[in-house]
Length: 628
Image 1 (cartoon, helix red, strand yellow):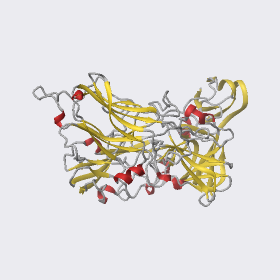
Image 2 (cartoon, one colour):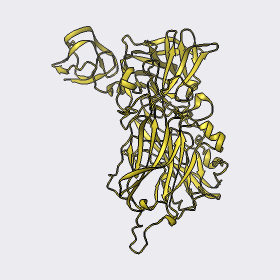
Image 3 (cartoon, helix red, strand yellow):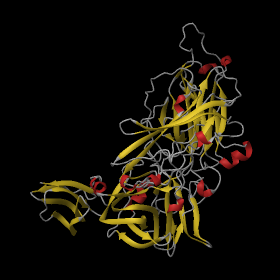
């Protein structure tokens, strides 16, 4: 049965912006994305134990024991997994496209296929072959999308009752797959009501002798169905299933889930109190967080003595600061879902202890967190380390660079505007804005138009317009979670509190990237008609204001209208086949030349030798040229 975008599930949040009216709404949609491919070939054969908790999220391609058929390895598509990282199956393929079999009815979505395993022996010439009485079990945790709690804080899309998650075993002799376990579409709320927990633990025995051969495999796959939308730009992803902590091994008793494993649960946090990244020029020690928040779990059946600490490294790998949290007992996670609460491990201090010194830009620092059982660590070290890369460049960011949803405003009133608040501590020149738009079905939102705007502050709300595009832009797509830099038509001097945002030209859905794992909702405002409202949606817009001449000079060189740009003498020549505008800036962002709409070739007036930025068309795409 085909579903509509306005049904009540977390992937699409429809929230009234003012009491007593449903004419204007903030909307969140699931997103489509590209996935990393498997690093190992299918002719690789593995031996027991088989284990993956997807904690090496940052590797590209993913260094796991799988053939990934569209599955997405990530850190944030569901809250509080067993250990940091998970894999998500949904309705889009590895390239972020709907599958060719997509219909309004059920169709197969992603698959996650193990590499072949050797179950005929343990590669020991003196050992007997494995058999059903060796207590061979496959265990894993799963969680449907959609989350629980307040509707405005949830992540992902709950599968429909007709959707399903399946586990198959493969007989290498007959080359047949057999379904050995399945779960129909269900909400997280329903699971908590029936089992008392969100992430569900499953233990499946391997009993049939036909599987005890070289070349055995298992796979997860999902049935899904397409979500529709009644507005352009809304047709999007759906039906997520999250998997974690997958283990296949012999000698298991078939009951307990305990594993001697102390691990991180969430990714490493920013060491700044407000931003994930910020310009080096704007940094001061007051921007440092007072404490950090770490989530640490102990999956064993007993308390374990653990050590925790973090180290800050510069770009050359030199240690700048070390924090030692000492030893603490990690409480047992099950059955009460208890995490480490000791402040020395869960809330390590930052301010008055350490501060960055980003004297040059761009510069990055690596903050490496580690937790260990005892001195030597536990048998599963991959989830014992999480790393945060602290960036000081030429932009502000509240988001982590990964979109879990798509944001937009639907309204019957105009204007439709969205903006994000930024605090500029030292006068600076804003020259560009980085934006990430999610691709939609048939790239519907790629034909929409918007304006970039900047406002000053008026008692905690946008006040006077201090910048506004003269030409309409359109969403551009660089790649999965790849920002497009839109150069401002003229640089803007900023100081104090400003609001940077977009004005939609139509009531269609722009589908701006939205990071659900970093809450900047208090910094997001939107307007439909009269008055600004503060967002109630937990997350951060993937919108980053950029400052200084280097921000303009680094804009990707992709002219919208495809014409050639070259120098001739001390002039710049722009050839194009369609009507457009041409603007030339120096490296400080100063407008040197602007042409009206025309056809053919535009030759700018004579320019002094140097580097210039040529903006072709209305989208903000530019090319850099050197005049000799």
